Length: 472
Image (cartoon, rainbow, N blue to C red; front, side, top):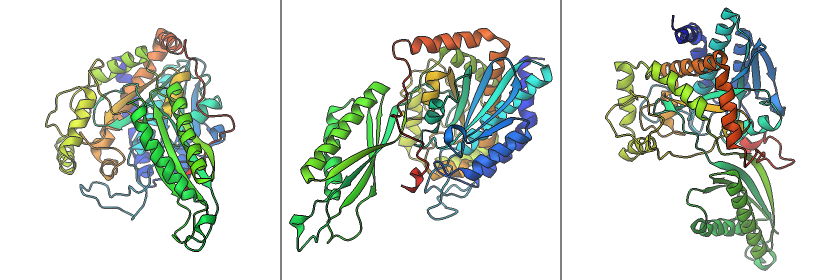
């Protein structure tokens, strides 16, 4: 029997429980650092599968690690389970139909991500035990990927120090090895303090913190012309100082997300934004305090692991979708714009087709123009050789962080893609166990990429996990 068939059979044997876990987590969407029930579900499943479980990793109540096996290399599988605010949506409905007005939803597919990664870990663990081969399999349950940088805090706490390789995946439109491209990102709050006054009777006595926030935003907007074109700066108003326009606002707070292609570029841009905030405070005779909420590094690639994962994905072929899967995907596609559909094809450098679901493997050397965001897996990639897959859990062109992703999150097509990518991940972990040269090559590749710029955590001294960030 082909040795890969053995690991794929292990995935198939365990898939029903992990699909059920994904569906349960879909039904209890919890946002950044509040994933109490979702983490408990993952921890319970790890115990059921025979893993040794450690909760509260890195001082984060919703982070968990499960480990199984003895000796040998440590193969890490990274999972997530946080949802997004405001994306509540019925499953299997191709129109916007919230379950709960203003409720949360898994608009990035992390219910699938965590369960799929655990499925790969379970399969590899069971294969090692069946064969009597030394090796340790770890599942990292990582909360708060959506802006909370939990993995960066876990890296800083040493949770990955003895891992040999790390494997993960993310829901997407296509079947491919995920390009190792993400932006370094800092989230920072700028709190302005001024002086309240009667806005009509004594406006000259007031010093408006809200004016300072507005001036800061204007200043940052002018800066956009003079920063790298691949950098990104966004903001959200957290506290405007009250609802009474006849009171000069004594306090206001704005949160900025500041992104750049690499850590040095991000650090420089953060300082420029800070200077603009200080200038706004000077103009309004207010004071300002900057507080770093979270920060993540850009992602590093790893050529040996990318080729190993690609080989497994090529042998598997795309997920086995059927007519019913394609029919529902067509209904979702009818809710999308032509621009949304065309944009994902540009991202992979492939010609556009009418297929509603991905039916091919994107070549490793495809001339990509990827849509770049940020992820805390970047910090893991600086300390452990890391590789990620993309699996087609949604109709081609579905924009993420939308109700359409939630609507597809526990459909049969998404479940098939989750199981399929677990097979590719488990096979890659197995390849590293069977051939230690793969781990050696992966570590050499990482050493070369970090030789000139060793890893430094983007989290400033004293910054702790922002466990309250979802409260604003």
